[in-house]
Image (cartoon, rainbow, N blue to C red; front, side, top):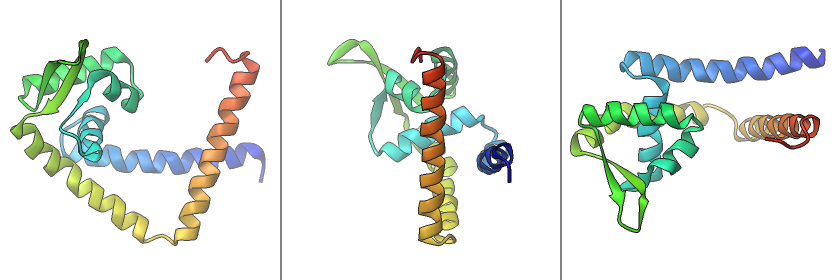
Length: 151
């Protein structure tokens, strides 16, 4: 198998995972980023998080995150307040309506993920995760080296 074919295997696997999430989002009438907003907040177990922290976790452009947040505020799912400890930061939290929606949207997804993981042999899962991380680290190192680390 050529290196190109091996790269394609990795990308095809990642694409299949993304398609599963996109399917869930489509069935629930949300975009992937909208679902990830609720996913990140529910997974954190915290009542609130900064807008900056959410942007970093979503790994999305700040303007995209801002528009997602505005849309969720308009729906009454999210509220935004100034951080009392740092007035430059905005704190995001779910309203009760948002918490109810997040549970309906994300908790079944957590269960699907856990069921999928439990169907795999632990050793195979560890190997797959290790390989994917090694590939990502190597790819980033190569790109940084070729661009003189300007990333």
